Amino acid sequence: MTVRPKLSLTMKIMIAMVAGIVLGVLINLFLADVAFVRETLVDGVLKVIGAVFVAGLKMMVVPLVFVSLVGGVTAMGDVKTLGRIGLKALVLYLLTTTVAVSIALLMAVALAPGKGLDLTSTQATYTAKDPPALADVIIGMVPSNPVQAMAEGNMLQVIVFALLFGVAITLAGNRGKHVLNFFGDLNDVIMRMVDVVMAFAPLGIFALIARTFAGQGIDMILPMLGYFMVVAGALVVHAVATFSILVRVFAGLSPARFFSKMRPVMLFAFSTSSSSATIPVNLKTVEQKLGVNNSIASFTVPLGATINMDGTAIMQGVATVFIANVYGIDLSLTDFLTVIVTATLASVGTAGVPGVGLIMLAMVLHQVGLPVEGIALIIGVDRLLDMMRTAVNVTGDAAVSCVIAKTENGLDREVFLSDEGDAAGRQTSAA
Ligand code: ASP
Image 1 (cartoon, rainbow, N blue to C red):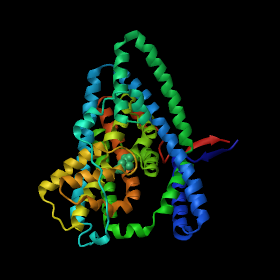
Image 2 (image 1 turned 120 degrees about the vertical axis):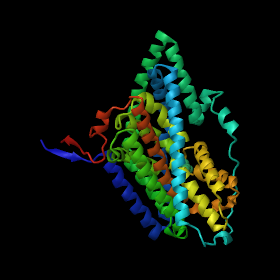
Image 3 (image 1 turned 90 degrees about the vertical axis):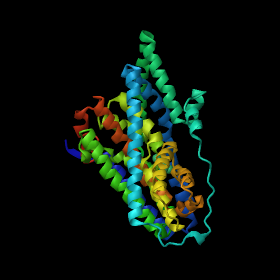
Image 4 (image 1 turned 30 degrees about the vertical axis):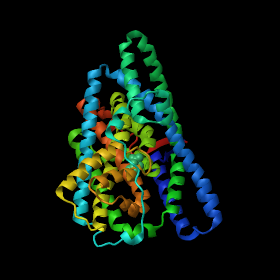
C-alpha cells in the first residue's frame, strides 16, 4: 500500500486560478477575434460553468445564514450577550473601515495618482443612481415579509428575522428545544452541501477567472496604472498591517497562520467578486479552521459580509483623490474628513455583490462636491479591483470575528493551531 500525497483544495484552487489567468490572457492576446473562441468558449462553456458555480454558492447563503444564526443565537443563551456581541461587531466593523479609508487617503495624497492627467476630455459619462436615505436603511432592516426577505436574499432582513427567531426559541423553553435540535441537524446537512459545492471550486474558479481575463485587456489598465497601483497598494497595506495587528494583538493569533487558513476564502472572494456569495465558505472557515465558536461566527460573518467593506472603502478613498486630481480640484481637510465618514457609511450600505462599491462612490463624490461623472474614468479598471477589494472585505470579516471571539471566550486555539485547512498543510490519503 503506498501513501500518496493529495493536493489540498487550496492548492487545487490556486492551480486553477493560475491556469485561468494564463488561458484568459492568451485568449485576450491572440484569439479575441476568433468568433468560435469568443462565442463557444468564453461566452459559452466558461460562462456557463462560472455562472453555475456562483449560483451554487449563492444558493447556500440564505439557508446557511438563517439556520446557522438561529442555532448560534440560541446557544448564546441570553439577549444581553447578543446585544454585546452585536455592539462589538458594529464598532469594530466601523473602526476597521475608518482605518482602511484613512490608509487609502494617506497613500493617495502621497502618491497623487491622476495629477497632471487630462482625461476629462474623453467625454466619459456616468449617471449616478440615488443612494438610499439613512432612515430608509433603518426601516428596511425589518422584514415585513420574511419569506420575501429570503427570496430576495436581503441579508440584513434575514439576520433580523433569524435573531428574533433564535431569541424566541430560548423564550419557548422546552418546546423550543425540539426546534433547536432540528435546526442543529439541519445546519450539519447544509454544511455538507457547502462541501459539495466547494468541491467544484477549482473548476468554477478556473472558468470565472479565464473569462474575466479574456475580456480585460492590459490596454484598459495602462492609462489608469497610477490609480490601479495605489488602490492595490492600499489594499495590501491594510490587509497585511491592520489585519495582522488585529489578529496578533487583539486575538492573540499568528497572522501567518490566519492568512494561510484564509487563502481559499480570499480566492473565492477574488474570483466571484461577491462577499455575499463567499459567506458559506467564510463561515465554514471561520468556525472550522480558525476556531471561532458558532454563536459568534454565525452572527459576525454574514453581518460583516453585508456591512463591513474595508476594501470597498479603500477604493472609494483613492478614487475620490484621483478624480479630484484629474479635475484639478483641491480637497480641504474638511473634505478628507467627510470622505472618511461617507466612505465608511457608503461601505455599510454597499451590498456584497459585484460592482456596487462603484455605485456607492457617487455618494462620496457628491458629499465633497466632486463631479460624479468622474466615475466613468475608473470604470474600465474596476472589474479587477473589485476582485481584489472583495478579498480584503471578507478577510476583514474573519479578522473581526476572531477578535470578538477572543473577547467572548469563544475562540478554540486548538482548532486554530491544527493543520487542517492550513494551505501549507497537505492531506495524505492511502491509495
Ligand atoms: N464586490 C464587493 C463585495 O462584494 C462590493 C464592491 O465593492 O463592489 O464585497
